[in-house]
Amino acid sequence: MRFVITCDDAGHQPPETQSRADGFFESQGVRASFFAVPYGKSGALGEDKRWLAAAHAAEQRGHDFQLHALDHSVFEFGWHPEWMMAILDEETRRRFAEERDEIARGWGREIFGEKLRTAIQVFEDAFGRRPLVFRSGALSQSAELYQALGDVGIPYSSNQVVNPGGWSYIAGNYDLPLDWAPGVPPRPYQVTGQVVEIPMTGAGQAGSAARG
Image (cartoon, rainbow, N blue to C red; front, top):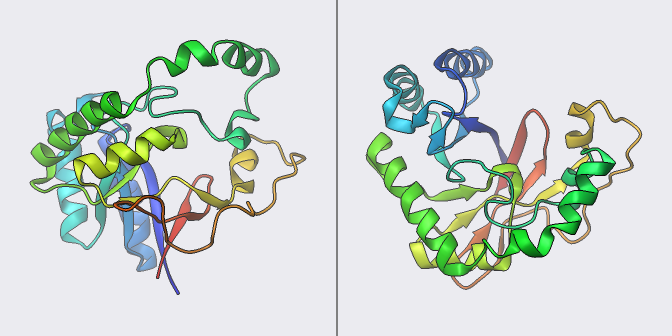
């Protein structure tokens, strides 16, 4: 089995961050897949010409870019995994739990479809091609998301994590017991008739997605 190193939030960081990450992987002889946020902190992907130049240079050296959310907002495509929510303070978790029904009113297959179409268009404008793989911001997900991915023609998702332990470590919580998720196969698997999930083996400052 081969592994792919993936990095989230491309385009959500300064151009220097992209170039630095690219340079590190180059020094190690590694090709990475960067998941790019269509509407990041600097606006749409194509608006920051310095970042776009760095991304295109990375592509020319063999790195890959795929789609990461629309604007990376909280609960953008569903609820976040419980192990990810666990790093929040107790008051914040309680508030989100109380507001869950209200938050869920902003979810739905058609709503997600519109968000994805917008995200795809921004990505196409920046890279001149459609993305093949989608990953939500902070891995927010729902059944309606996978339906919407099929509707817009994105065949692959990478939202599940086989071993989420690294996420608590980057928050400095080394006592949170997290083991391999028994419900997540350590290989690509069919989620719907149109979408295949490519799970990450781990999530943290860097994750790796298996591909068979």
